[in-house]
Length: 131
Image (cartoon, rainbow, N blue to C red; front, side, top):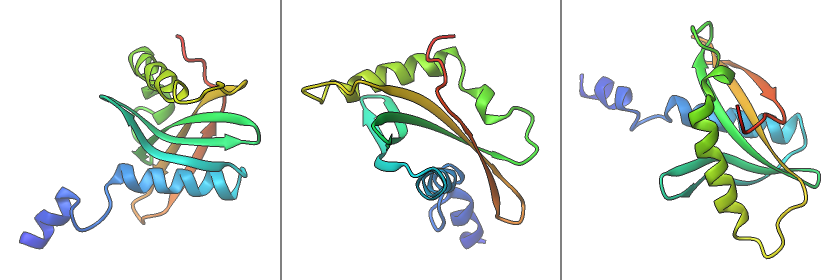
């Protein structure tokens, strides 16, 4: 019984979110040719799941992992409030640079997890940061 509880708490295996972020990073690298710079970058309370380069474009990636067939697709869960938090984190990240990147964008990667452990990755590029 203790092992089941520990697995349920995510201590013995990666969390669903962690699994989805790993799948998203693999997809962006292998399928899209992105170069991943950061994973789970934090500034205070704000977090950016992935930060990468797509060619010369700096890309901030919000990853949403869901059970396949869930009621609300991950893309739609990036609402006005979440976008505001992401904007704050994006600007905090870019303040580190002496010269800010000329081009940057926000992408959303939705990872749908099937009961057999496999997943489907959907990539939404250049999401407006204001609703």
